[in-house]
Image (cartoon, rainbow, N blue to C red; front, side):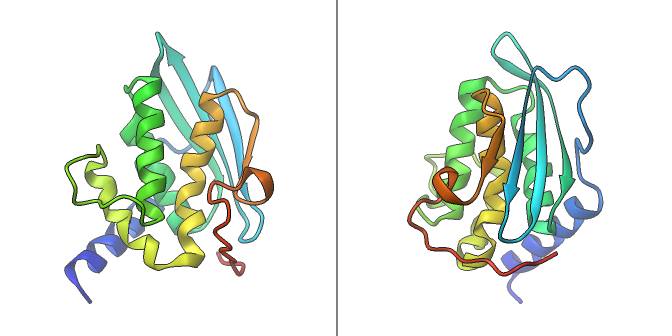
Length: 166
């Protein structure tokens, strides 16, 4: 196993066992529900915005390890950022997961999130990693629900099929 794959697995396992910012956020000013109906990931993202910044963030729900780890790292990465910076980071993460952004280029703000770059090689898991970010985008834009399927698909035209998983 390569060092990158081992790091990926270690990070996923750590954030799955001990997710950061897990739980419903009291006094959230924004929230959204995210659903990946093909695999069963079902999460909620809660935000408290203050002066156009993410003052506090949390997530809750039931999901696979990749989705939970992505949500955990997402909450850590966007806390304290401006809404604009959080949206930009969400787009960069989605582009990286889809193989549209080189995580080694200096043209991004991914930092430790680069560990998810390998998910692009696992087409059945791409939407698992993207769901928290898609749900964050919905919450920031006062949209109540986000889905990885249908017209809300964050990967339109991807044709990514996912068997159920835990």
